[in-house]
Length: 173
Image 1 (cartoon, rainbow, N blue to C red):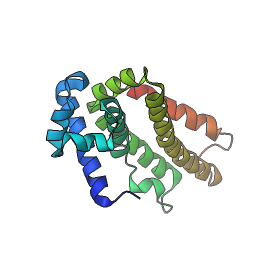
Image 2 (image 1 turned 90 degrees about the vertical axis):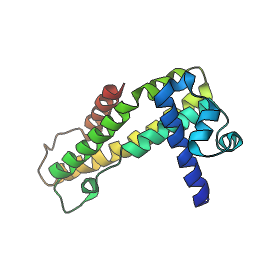
Image 3 (image 1 turned 90 degrees about the horizontal axis):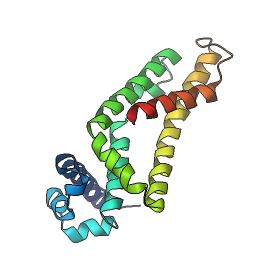
């Protein structure tokens, strides 16, 4: 496990990278500026990240994780499937709005990682895990809705969840 002080420092670095890149763009962002913004030395940045590209990928992933926070109602078994589905939709919509504010950073990340197979794989694997979690929630809610008669029994849960996440992903990009 990573010690809490290291986790806190890493979060400060990611927040600083997000701020600097949002202000001056990825190409204009310098590791010195990010270190200054985070209140750490430039060497500390390299202790956490191999380089600017790795920092950018981590920043984008952090943005997704931080902004797409599921509302507690999504997992509340006392609520019906429709209310839980509404809560999941609201959670993703709020995350979408926050991610959209930093969309230039995301586009820069994709342009960088496309030329780096290891970075591309890291980003894709991490995003797949995030989406798989959302899809799992959606499928659970849909199954509960089928079981209690709220949703049609012939609903193909897997197809619906895959399409729903694809629409969400398509809106982001």
